[in-house]
Length: 293
Image (cartoon, rainbow, N blue to C red; front, side, top):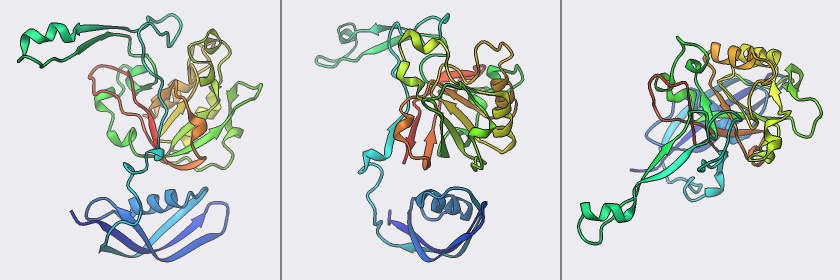
């Protein structure tokens, strides 16, 4: 397939005043064309812009022209793994059983089923859904909510992301004032608390950072697409009402818990992915969460 680039002019207005214009801007694209809405998001991400209001794309032209940048495969530094390993016997949440990982077929067992020199391993895992880094769908909180199989991929993959810094503080709850004038509409909002440093220790289960009810209401009201946290729980586990889960999942906003490595992300300008197995009648499942910067 011939490489395609898009050439266009743009006008960007910022929500805090001012604007930016460009003429004859070119970007590499995948496929034969790119929608103007996708292109607007692309240019905002490419320039790492914050507090963006309206974006207008003008005079768009598709050019049959070789790409000028290396691909993501040639730039592995663009992919940032944000997931914990799942290991036999590890405890994700105190009181829930650890995964049991065993062989179903060892390589030796398999040899009798295949030609000489051919062997395979088939593993077996027994675990609760809340294991490792996982996503919560609305069904996790609400019997009539969307389950994992019903979540659209667009709610979990290739989301523009923003990072909220909340490390090294005495206050545990992330509240409305932690978001300032941040533009979160349609974005994956990742709460960077640094609590992942305590993963697989007793400290992880005590006094973890969380999102307040008011903070959850603000994110939902501002149109966040997904909310993630690198902590034990997005709620204060002492609050049995679980307001953050209740508010976010009640607005069809997936929640990702037990993230890690958020310190390697920029404040904005990255894409976030957290896709689980497509299981019907399940509300939660582990994901391989990652970002593309």
